[in-house]
Length: 100
Image (cartoon, rainbow, N blue to C red; front, side, top):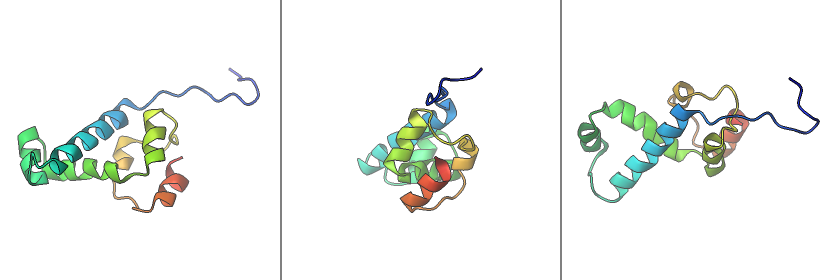
């Protein structure tokens, strides 16, 4: 199929990435509110491994425009949940160069 000039192919948001972002920001709110004192305490309550929760929570450190791009399905094709759970730079300009 060929698209008209200037048209972007429609993309769907990656549901696994969107779910992980939602969980990350929910957990962050729970920690910041004081509802849970530590990541370990929250992980135990949620019934998941501390290490997994810590990796998912790192998603809250992404540049806001990257989060928006993921939610809209506009991230690069190489961006997967597995890739996003690996350590990444905390410099937002690095995110843009690598993820969009």
